[in-house]
Image (cartoon, rainbow, N blue to C red):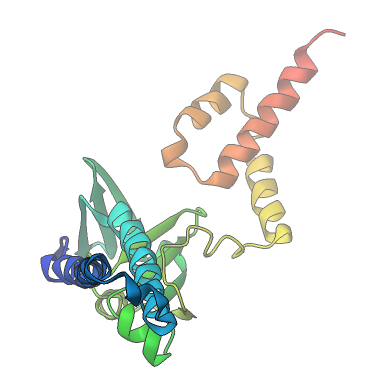
Length: 228
């Protein structure tokens, strides 16, 4: 088993890169306080504005990574062909065979953006039950996880590589969605309302489609038993 924890070197790099522009802003403000005439220098003001904007964006993107992976532990179990994720005391096991899609998100190859967001990259694993797993560079380099799990990836290059929760939302089209729900509906139609309610309560053990189908059958059975 291989275990991955928060990478302190990447976290420290993020903090240092964020603090450097703040230090520069501090120097600039002192310069302005000493000599207000610098406010007439358009180029100087433009430079300060760019530094501030980039710093704010960098901070926002870093926060999205921290929110996803702080307190998270990742274990790759080669014997079980599984990924074990623990966060806030809750453990989740993902079988490699259940990963139907993998996106590798990184900053644009543009020299400017790549130099700023070099450490900002992450993976989005789309699972068979329509769930998603995010693994950012704070835990492990995406290339390492890709090699370890033998994943085929779709690369997404973006100027601002923040953790985008919408990625992978369109993996299943409407027709596939309907077919999956219908398959569970047909297998649930003969079950009692009590059995179906138990399935809904155990939502962590069933796929999203199973829960939708179970609720649909419960609704139909309830309406059928309701006197006019």
